Image (cartoon, rainbow, N blue to C red; front, side):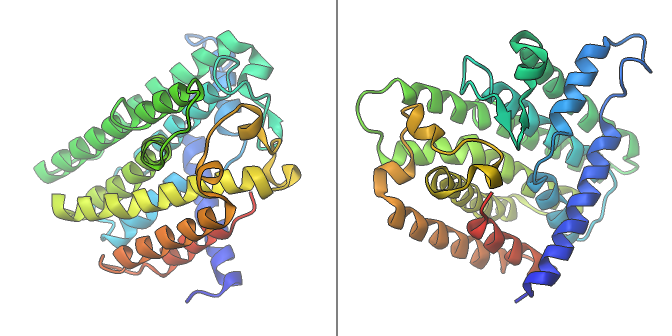
Length: 309
């Protein structure tokens, strides 16, 4: 098992690498590109560079390395994944959604630029994400490379759309209007789609571009990722009850204030904590069936269930 200080140093290096890649693929300020309104590029850059764990690009790169790091183009997808994740947060914070003015200790995009520009900034990031991912075709040299990038694009689009993250977001919004209590199955649907889908996409894309992951392996990766995603989201729900607003960078108790039903409100705190541990251990067992060195990944999963922010 990786020692805590070694893990934290490795996580820091991987996060810094992802941060550099993401920043490098963002559009330049409108001042440097006279064909693009400066306000939108400023809002896009503000949204993405406001901080974050960079969990999804880190997971993508780790799977890419585990499966051999065979093909070029991973950086395009790392950046595009974080753009999609960020756009979802920008829209999630809007007055019509969660109406949050702070994220990661900073003013949210709509709170700085207005809600109309917040909508447009999210739209712009989504479009720019696919523009960026499509650039990976430029570095393809063999038929297998083109097929791998095409599969990666399909995975990205499907998991970001109505069968993935957006589907989960729709279910989450509809759940807020329900007078009756949500079932465990309904809450898990929200978690697997709203949170788990992009984690699944990140891990599957890493494997597809990293080596020759077939559909059977991708299904296994998908199950592992869904466990991580659900555990991550339940831990978020736990922190909304037990966390510290200074550590989280946002007010705690927002779920209760918004009348949102969560795994914690349904099952209780102790049961929620046990489920996070169960899902995480199951994810680690699946992970051990994959090739390559996964010591860091195991440590990362354990870190996610013990995090305080």
